[in-house]
Structures are given as structure tokens and as C-alpha cells.
Length: 357
Image (cartoon, rainbow, N blue to C red; front, side, top):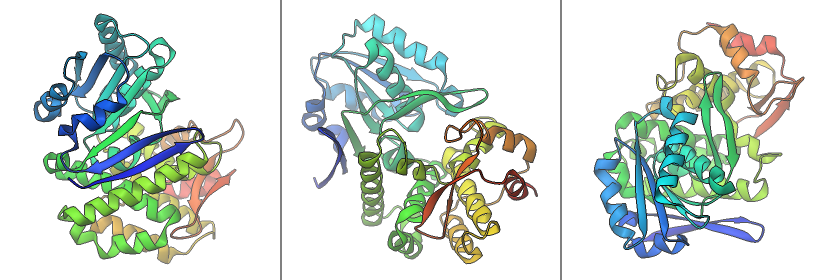
């Protein structure tokens, strides 16, 4: 079995991202990241029938429990995190316990948040089962839950002990979920790697067909980008904010439409196009690069146009974004492909213009 290992180095700390096929069954590898005897596996009702038994089989004689949550962004709530806390209590989980997050970004965020809170911080291992989680949310230690007023407003930075990205599980991923993950892959080219962006343009058909070589390369490049940014700016005081290109618009769309109506990656795809359009409107970038971005996303089967929405409501939700300060709206815009930047005090009239039909 060929495995690519990428290390996320955070000063004197580090953890591996393992990328390959069959990794869920390679228990000797990932069990080495489990330090204690108590393990809680958190997953959802969609993933559990496919992969839960394989993970439990690998735990051997460790004392373990499971939490199977409903699937979907609408369940990334404080109530769901409470269910995880209750399960940890029933398990008798001590400070050397480990939570395994077996699922997509919702499960990873929830399980990581619970791990950050239980006894003020226990270990967790990410086992992402979606493309989006493999290339983005499982790496970097951002955890949290949604509130009715906005996404991820309650959370913590809490790094995993390891990320186990088994490419084989993507075979069961529905097409819409798979395409949503490709939006985050495109993001890495858009914000800082024009050569990767060009490669994606040339390989869009191979990625749509889930060809193993192209998919493995895309995941590895994305993870290397994410690992490098996180190593340089773990707590998002500077460069790491660039990873939110398209996300301020996207999060507002998700909240306004009701969590689960738009998948996260779909909202980010639309958000990146809006951010590129705004950059062009402000004279910071060319419209030609906006068209290239829109064309690539569309070629990968992603939405690129704003759904019917209330511009004033979207702008109000964008003001709640975590990157803002008390007096300024901050957005991630760009100078063109591969050149994202943080822009402070963006003219709200210009933002409203791109949000209007």
C-alpha cells in the first residue's frame, strides 16, 4: 500500500496526515496515535453502515463507545456536542482518552470541539470520509458548532493527533458531495498556486471521473498547502485568513438559505466567484481571471451564480464574520489567480452591488 505522509509542524509539536487507499484497515498505523485506553468513535448515520465496524475492529481491546449522529450541517449544534459529552461520561473517559472523528467536516468539527472541551482538552484523530474534509476541515485544528445567527461562532483551535485520509472511502461519496470538495481544492490554486490552478484546468475531466492518480495528487497538493499555512499561522492572526477566500460570502449564503440547502463547498464556490467579481469591481484584479475561476468551477460541476436571496440579509450576516473587527468589514479578495489578500474596510456599497441580482 502506497501512503503519502505530510507532517503538520507546529513549533515543537507535529502530527501526520496519511493519504492512501485502505488506511482504515491499517490499524497498526493509526492506533499508534491513541495514547489511552478509552476511545469514543463519533460518526453519522450515513457513514456508520459503511465504515464504523472496520474502525471498531481496529481498536482491539481498548474500551470504546460510539456516537452516531444524524447526517447534515443542521446537526452541527451545541445539542449534538452535548450528546458526545454524555457518551464520554458514560464511557468513563479520562484525560488520556481519544475521540475518533469518522465522517465529513460536520463530524470532524463536532468531535474536535468536544475533544477540546472534555476535561479541558483530550486527543482526537481525524478520519475524514469526504473530499472536502480531507483537503480542508480535517487539517489545522479548527473546531466548532453553528448557531442560528451564524456558522462556527462557537469553537476552539484544537489540533488532531493524526489525520487518516483513506482515498478508498471516496468511492461511496455521492457526486454532489464529491464536487463540493473540489471547490476547496480549487481554492488552494486560487489563493496561492497559479501552476496548480492551471493543472486543475487541464485535469478537470480526470477529477470528474475520480481518476486515482489525479485525485491523489490533488489531495496531496491541497494538504501540503494547508499544512504550510497552518504551520506559519496556527491561530489565524495573519496568513491563515487567506484560506477563507470565498467563505465570508459562502457562510452568509449557508446561513440565509438554511443549513443543508447549499453544501458548504457549493456555497464556497459561489463565494469565491463573488469575491473575484468584487475584486474586479474595485479595480484590484482583472475580469478575465474571474471568468477563468468561474469556468473551472463550472467545469467541475459546481454552482457559480448567486441564488435568489435578500442582499441586505446577506450583508448583515457577513458583518458577523469572525475576521471582522468592531469597526471594519474584512474580506479575502485577490489580485488575480494565485494572489489572495486580506482587505480591510471594504466599501459596503460595493459588497451590496455584487450581492444584488
